[in-house]
Length: 421
Image 1 (tube, rainbow, N blue to C red):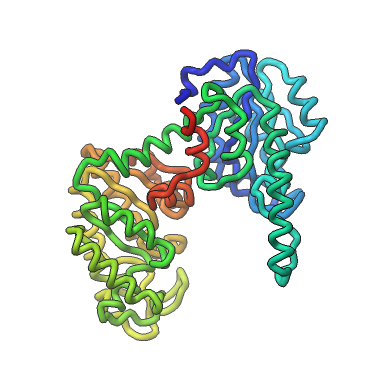
Image 2: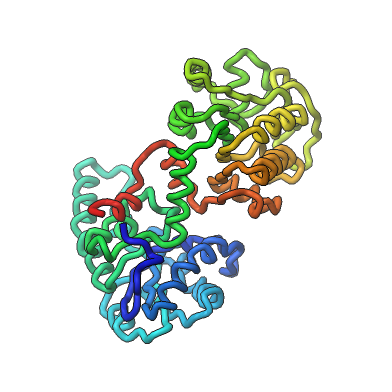
């Protein structure tokens, strides 16, 4: 497979799919430019070789052209961080865009307008009434699919090479993330530096395991993590189940959880997962105590109690000190660690202690030689909030993409580069 480090972009135009879906405040100021910074090595490599990056990305989930989702709002920061002249195309396709690309001079990059302003990018019809007939929906879907090929071909026609550096969208079979790759020869399509690192990190977690391997799965719902947990049961030695899922597992085993979040229709599933883990020899680690509150608020009255004996009118919003020690002990003995999901409502400052304790234990284990991968939006937000990102092996930029990779699914954005190589 072609490696970006070995490719010479001199005199070539490269369509680079990045993930610049960054958060903006009400005045369109970027509040976190991590995703832009992550793509800089790839863009700088192309410029340094004497090539021109044609930068494609989405921003938000527009249902058509909308100024609040325009990539023009981030143009200045992209140019500042890249340290190069970045021009802007008011459209991602069209004759004016084509002319701007043809006129690019050495040292210049071009940022295209939001790819998702076009339904063809995602291949999903828009504007259909909710009560539209199945026939109408199928007709609309066919129409978009037919025009998607033309849209994809236009994007591909602008460049000599294709670089996918958007791991965060690798699980989407969109025009710019997967379909476009077929228009380029094997030697002219490749992962960017960020995508390479993401793929390597996932492979290390799933295939190159040093044991003991511990996965920490947080989140509020068992239903959203079923496939991940089941896939991990065939790989891990220890599985720490935490966050809101704690209370579904606790109630399933007969515990009293007060007003804590719980999926009552998933109690049997929780027990089934515990049985599967036992059959596979996986050590399931659940909380023993909780930090409880009398309301879902940062300013609520708080206390600590056994996780299976939470009083009525109270709810668990974080793990307690005993559980912090329990989790830390397992983590520090591990050689491979995956963390996805906080231990509690870390958005509230009074309920961050458990997540911080887990993060600090992972940092300590990493310093002792473990490989640690942190992924999923909330976990990434945790390590950034606590200043722990530099202490773990790798922080993934992909939320849904990482989770689907862990589930064992083939990611279209990765397969499109790897096939025919």
